[in-house]
Image 1 (cartoon, rainbow, N blue to C red):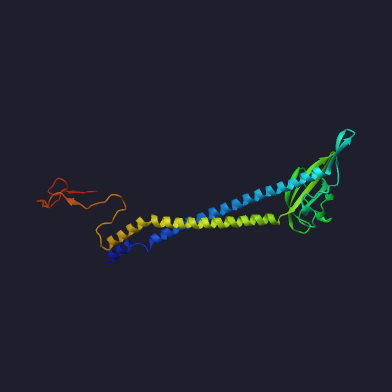
Image 2 (cartoon, rainbow, N blue to C red; image 1 turned 120 degrees about the vertical axis):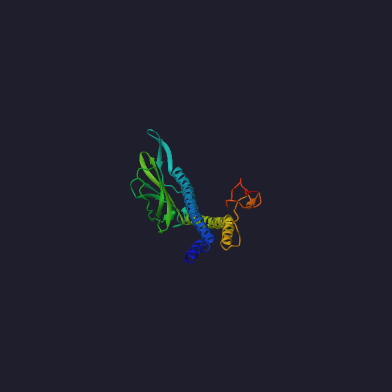
Length: 269
């Protein structure tokens, strides 16, 4: 009795194996989808930030070119035409005239922090620009006169063999606001996509495991003695053995297959 009980216990299926398998499949797929979408979101925001920085620098570069064109004057000299640096009164943008507006420009000699000319918006305050070194152009983020962050673009020019550095800076409040708005839209979009993917995975797992559920039910019925055979999940249908001749007793008490008084054939539809 103990042995039969043990065998019966071994044959008993575990509690809800299909549900456990489906949960694991959905969890792994959902975790992978979440990580992939998160990395994609970070990548998209990074690309947008770089593109915004290039567009911002291109706008500052236009102001630098206009400033250079205004403060350089050419005239006749002993050796021909010479360029002379003059004090510019550049107001290409009204914000260069508003006090501490966040938009500034300065002109200084290379290698020195002493400002030769500056915009009216600075009100005489210094603009802490990092050294440009030997580079012709440099861009970065620095603190403005009010402590707010500004994006500064510096370009080095040479006038009569004297190097000068022209710097144009603009406040970055609107710049970071645009990036934050883009990141919010990306996160919202990827969340919707992620929920759709998880739902699709859940439905796919439920539909894909239906044959396993039917097979499990059939095996359970066989164990309980309700059916004599389990239904196989295949296209062909199987029928039980059919005897080709009537059962007759053999003098030797043996049964032969195919050559004796009894033969059996397996028919498959």
